[in-house]
Amino acid sequence: MSPGAPQEGALGEGESARDEVLQPQQEREEAGEQEEDYGVEVVVEEEEEEEETPTHLPFAPSSELLDDVTTVDPSYTISLIRQLLPQGSIVAKEFSAKQGDPEEKGENSENGESAQLESKDPWEECGCILWDLAASKPQAELMMNNLVLEVLLANLHVTQSPRVKEICIGIMGNLACHESLVDAISMQNGLITMVVDQLFLDDSACLSETFRFLAAVLRSSASVSWAEALLPDEILSRVLWIVGNTLNSTLLEKSIEFLSTIIDNQDVTAILLQPLIKVGFVDHVISLLASEIEKISDESKFDRSASRDLIFHFMEELSATDSCLEVMSSSDQLIQVLDKIIKLPDKFEVSSYCASVVMILANLLADGKHIVPSLSHDLPFLEGLFDILPLVCDDNQGRNALWCILARLLAQAQGIDMNSSSLKQFVSLLLGKFTLIKDDLESHRVDKVDLSAEDTYLKHGISTSLSTICCIMERWIAEKSSLSEEEDPLTESTIENARKLLNYCQNYDM
Image (cartoon, rainbow, N blue to C red; front, side, top):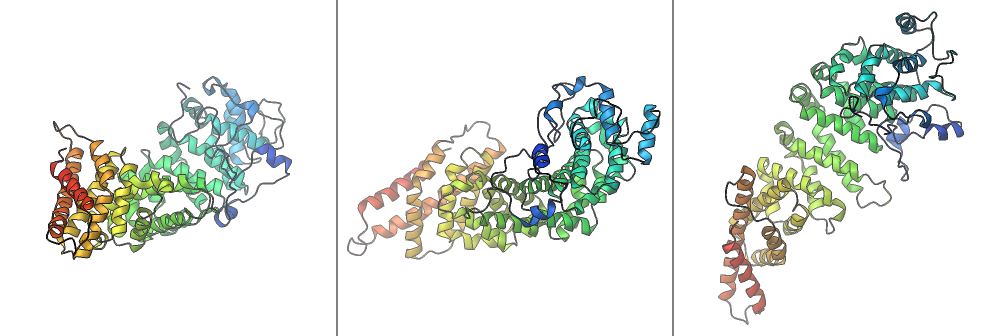
């Protein structure tokens, strides 16, 4: 859609925005369902495994899907807003006066307009269409000029219906995706307080849309006023409680995206990060990650791989933030989570997270040097790191981080006196991973001319690692050469393999 193409986070043409815990309207009508509070179910109970409903925005009625919202008659859009007017409200009178209506027209108006759809709930039908239309900037501007915010706020003041609240906040969320409208939205009397109050609802669909709206405004020029509204400890604690307790994947993803927006915007970070840390922000996210990792091996749990991917990327982002890294580097729970992932014998289920895992670990080792000694002598841990090499081969940052981790841990291990038994175990590990090492290095030759900063960083990690491997192999070969066959009946082929690895490392040139 050209002039009305949706902004980031807004509904696109033909997309659906309904939360996965809600049934399509037709199914709900057939079942005779009334509006329900889904929040308690979502936080306390498991999701259905068969849910495949799109999770972003609401379904517009199929008869009303519009091929090009930029050609919609303005009078049609205005008639939709009219259908949302709460009867007897002040805004209904203001709307009628603005439109020059001879009398107030509320949601039960029988004026025969096209917006009066043949359904049991015309309010919901009209609201969903407006939700779709709000993704178009021309339509969004038209709505703003025709009291849509006042109408939505009036509904939020009087309704007890979670579905009505979800639609109202969803429309606002799409409006807020248009940067030119955000200041006007933020200046609307009572709107900031009303939206923040929605965080204390227990309905997952409403909460998802609230987080989506807040993420949009925190990315905008009006971010500071919204960040200040979120400052009270009770609000920040509520956000963290939702993140840590929801079992709804959509809500989890929207809440993590909201928190990520806080980290991405320096002005917002300056206001909210320290208060968040004060109420346990980092520990909450670590606990969430630990909980998600526990579910990997539990086949009875609903698959939330997308959510885990998002959490790992978010943890990676936090590890690059100094004030968060300080807390993370002292967290035994986080080290245990990373240790468990790295030592998994079959990394297929976590392959998409491995780059984030090594990025987090690299940042932790740089800040928490007390972690290095114990990890450097943990051979299963080192073995797991080498096994990750082919899983991050296409991720330059992940691969660079992995080689720097190996350099740090191997240098630490080699720098401490090893007894013969430890030396033998290290040599056995390195010989077993020779093929992985060689395959990685041979497939990533770097042009020595005009090395980038990233290439230089990688070169240091690789050269340090290979130099340490050489020292370990030389010491072991010298030790074995001084022993007779009776003293150590080691096969000649093993010693030959050790010499091959030593020779490769000595002659490798990036």
